[in-house]
Length: 105
Image (cartoon, rainbow, N blue to C red; front, side, top):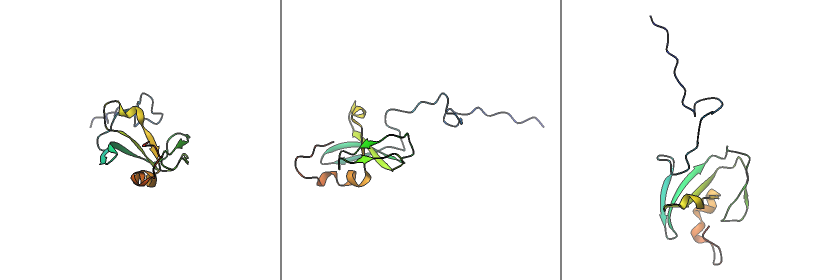
């Protein structure tokens, strides 16, 4: 019987993640497209286990602290990923119900 062959690990499977790069654009199977009266959007659910970084939700103007699951969205047009915004999930769902004077994002 021949010895077992060592399997080469993918960069994302390595314990130190050495050599791994995160995709910047849309990820098939992870991102979804949504259409509403305010336009077409690419939406990604974020588990909140990322870096210790605080984001400001454009819906309620409150902080999204690290560890809180939330949504990242950007306009579905070329170059739209430069306009990514982090939203509370409830704020994203209710964004069309905001009163006058509130910006789109």
